[in-house]
Length: 152
Image (cartoon, rainbow, N blue to C red; front, side):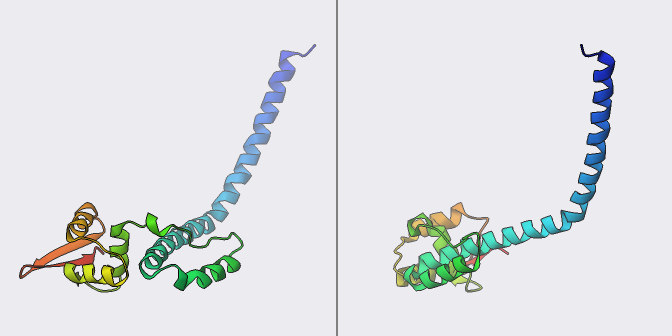
């Protein structure tokens, strides 16, 4: 038969052991914290660059970049290539890829650039994309001409 006093003693011992472990655990976590933060910063930067690369590939065409994606997969053990379906890149993403390359561009020139890269878009669709993504695009009107730039 188990005595309650024995259970009480075992619980106290378990608490002491867990408390000692937690102190060591927290000390080790504190030592690793800067490395964890750096890892998360690198992951965020990689995500931004992968998304931008996907937009660029969607504008220029996938064939041009297939060898680079294979190289990227070979260099990374986790196989983090740039995966996407060009149909998944919305119009505003295509527009952002082009606008990233210039300080500002007239909307009519942006439409012509999209057409040059084989992506037809109506002026109305472009205006809708600009209005829907005000957090990404900044528009200015000068002499009845509309210019687009990325928000910084």
